[in-house]
Image (tube, rainbow, N blue to C red; front, side, top):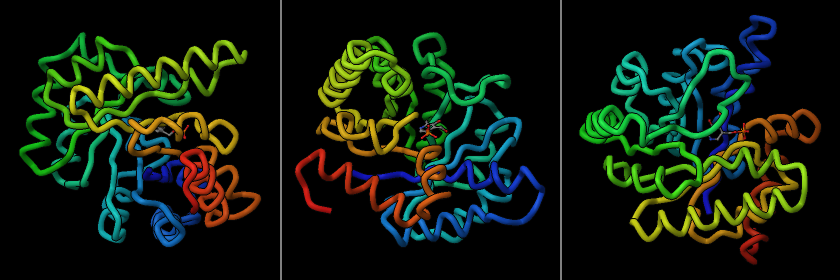
Length: 243
Ligand code: PXP
């Protein structure tokens, strides 16, 4: 199972003071050295954390792969076609939200998602759609030709009772298995941390987890290398593998 380290909130800290540090490039290189299998970053329309220059700099310097999260807009499509990351994950975006709330509604905009998927795929970029673990959305992701989906784990992470969490876990497990049957590569992410990652990591149909906020928060206290080491250890242990 792969870990994508999302470095958005390194930029959040930097932007809080308008300094040049902490550097997202430095974070990406450190993350790679200490176990990140890929680097994920979200260029939001309002540029609240990652800026355009960060995307170029990270793409140029890393030796794993860049997973660029972006909204379904023409501006972002042009950016992606210029940067040419290995992967693009298309996410829904609302300006007022604190973070990405809910998955992309592929069903409601199939033609547009299909067109973006085609253009990105033709440019050699692997397309992932960030969706809820909903059978109709998974089927729609398959129908528009996306090779990859990322299941939104936010509702699982935010569940406030064991029952609600168990229900969300079943939903994600069923979604991942349906996606596998359809031949989709299945990733997952959002709201995952060292305490809740194991049940998700246990789902063998999931290939990759993208984790940001909790890793960067842990890094404040124990450093990024140790935060990544502990996360990968938890992921591997969930699959009874040594890390
Ligand atoms: N995956 C996707 C598609 C996201 O949009 C985000 C948040 O940017 C994450 C994963 C990571 O979420 P978190 O920061 O809660 O770990």
